[in-house]
Length: 275
Image 1 (cartoon, rainbow, N blue to C red):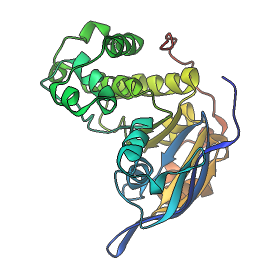
Image 2 (image 1 turned 60 degrees about the vertical axis):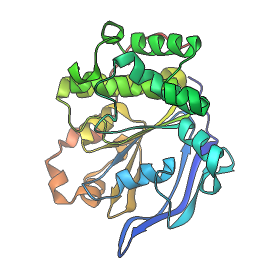
Image 3 (image 1 turned 30 degrees about the vertical axis):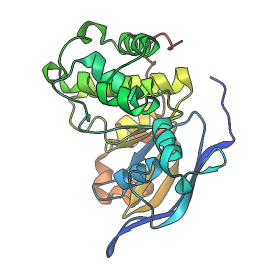
Image 4 (image 1 turned 90 degrees about the vertical axis):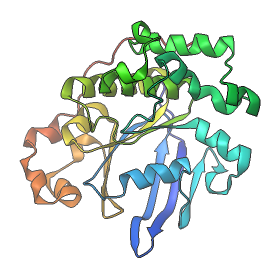
């Protein structure tokens, strides 16, 4: 994949206050196209609020979000819906429809491109069905295509959510604690899937994580947050003990010292890109 260094996503002075509590406090970041970024921090650090601000699920108190020269904070109506289609969200609790089958859940990722009646009736184009089948094949879920989602494991559900995001043909994926409720094996499968679409499709991925070790294995860049502010920004190999203390406090000292030296990633899952 060719590295493109021009900033794609730019946050400037981004702030969100809920009454007297400032959840995100003056965050300024440039995220180049094609990076996989791990956002680390303890509960309450502002990680989830930051991703919801980028997707415009919530409105900033102040500051700006720009994407490819477009001021995202000014988007309204259809332009805002188009932005949310381009900046696909993946949630910790999957946000799937349990009683629908896997294929239909993936197809829901295309609804923003439909007229109102087609949306209400959930009518999908042949090309969308083909795209959904390809996405499921790519994520190792084609055998579950006609199963109801409620019969799947948590790891399978999260991969269905990633397949649904792929059907949106996003330029940006915002993954909010996607592995927090998963066992280690399923967590690796989900992170492998996210890194695969990042590497092979060139999609920028911002992923909220708790585990330093996971971020070090999968991410090009780590952004550490504490009390709504960015306290670290750099590659995993530069995450020193002092930087870990700034993010987590002295409890971070329990992380093995080899972490900072081990920025290598495991090989990505080899899957065919969606054509």
